[in-house]
Each structure stands twice: as C-alpha cells, then as structure tokens.
Image (cartoon, rainbow, N blue to C red):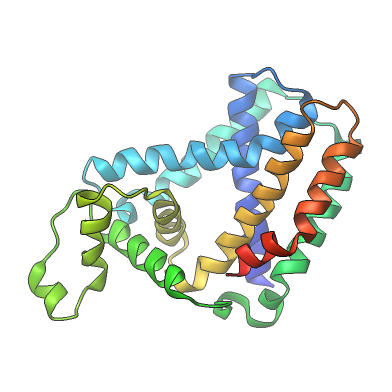
Length: 238
C-alpha cells in the first residue's frame, strides 16, 4: 500500500506544480485542458532545475532533499494566492478513471510494494545505473577508471553515454531526484515512478483531445482508451 500511495502522491505532486506554473503563465488553453496537461508541465518544471544543478557540478543527492519540497511548497503558495478554477465536476470522473488506469497496470504493487520490478530488463538496469551516477556525481564529473575496471562502480561507465555521446538524461535525473528525496534505491522506486509517469501520459493524451472539442466527454474517452491500450500498458510494464 505504501508504494501505491507513493506513486499517486508523486503524480499529484507533478500535477500541483504544473497547475501552479499554468496559473502564473496562463497559456491559451481551456480550463480542463490546462488541468489535464499539468502533470506533464510539472515534470518539466521539476526536471529543469535538477538538470541545471547537476550540470553545475552538484550530485543530485546534495540538493534533491530540499529542491523538490521547495518546489512543492512554492506551488502551494501560488495556488493559495492565485486560486485557479478547478472544474471538480469533471475532474472527479477523471480521478476515477486514473485510479482504474493505475489498478489495471500497477496492481502487482499491491502485492509486492517497492519490491515489484516487473520485467526488470536491461533498460531498467541502465536507467537505474544512470540515476546512480547522477545521484553521486555532478553531470560532467570524470569517472574513476580504477573503480570502473575493478567493478566497484559500474555507473561510472555512463559518463561516456551522457557526457561524451550527449544522450538525453531526463529520465535518469528524475529517478535520481526521487531517489535522493526518499532514500530508496532506484530498483525500488522504478515501478512507482513509471506508474506515476503512466498516469501523466493518460492525462496528456486527454489534454490533446480536449483541445478541438469543448465537450468533456472527448478527453474522458481518450483517457479511457489510452488507459486500456495494450501497447501503452505493455510499454509501462516493460
């Protein structure tokens, strides 16, 4: 149950941060559309300072414990001051649908909690090792070759991917930030984070459907179709 609550809390955290950003910089979106896109906006808002602080040379473990709570607290202050309109009548149905989407794909978390690793494929291992590197080192820190060759720190090898090859690192940085905040290892928080991202994807798809059509039924149907999509749910589990 703890893993379930953590996953939902992380999703709500991104949503609150996103709503606050939209309240400050209102885009040309309908109210419901803005609410639905808020988790994606929150993810982007959180990852940007993590990215820049890491590139400044700080290990994520040195700032995640204060940065994420500070962003959440600032978002709550913004919501208290700006008091954005929230269409609760429509949102309650989306809330029920999101809960159903979570249970459809994430029900093993009820049995295994933070021990659920799903397929545990090589991608999961690579993301976790990348997160470990960012957790303990600044973005551009050179690897300790002796530790790498001796097998004491395999995460150091990811310097060649992120720095030398310039591969995108947002997912790994987000995983490292959550790791640095709550202290559980990457393999323990991986699936709860993935499920929170899955719910954000469902909301993002619904937000796209809410654009051209004024009825609240269209985004609700879109969210439902994404939630039960076999390929989408397989992508989440895989």
